[in-house]
Image 1 (cartoon, rainbow, N blue to C red):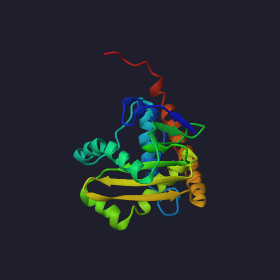
Image 2: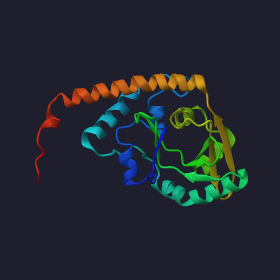
Image 3: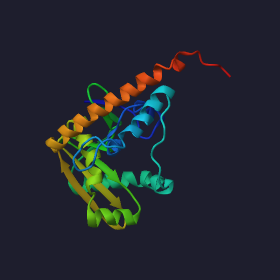
Length: 213
């Protein structure tokens, strides 16, 4: 496992992730329950190939920008509350990859002197109540097990924070059978992405000199 020391959300962070499948998008590669290659994986491969060919990240996070910005403002308070209630110390982490650099993940924090990480959510009240009542569900499984695959850690704490609602903390441990299936599906996905990239480059277009405006 390698750690690239960049600030999450920065230009440097986006460039470090360029063309690389990341845990937050693994739900686009595998089925949540079984971890098999998804029928939707090809569309995500198209995105990664486009990023590689253009040399620019493509924004894939679509949502309510107001709540995204609010979440960023609340995250320091969430970290303080997590550390206070768990008596654990954490530190921010930039972008993590496997040793070969072919897949990556960006958990929000690493737990010091413990084999764990923290994924922090500061969402709208209705979303928070959903976490409180229903938990995170299977949709979160590819991301969290993907983080454990990349980081080689033992567990990830999901921590949802809202200033006027009870916090939600869910610890997920490694699921080795699922991680094995996930790794196999990712290998197939990477082979598909690389084949697409080769086919695009074989057009010869990307060997042409670029016109300077």
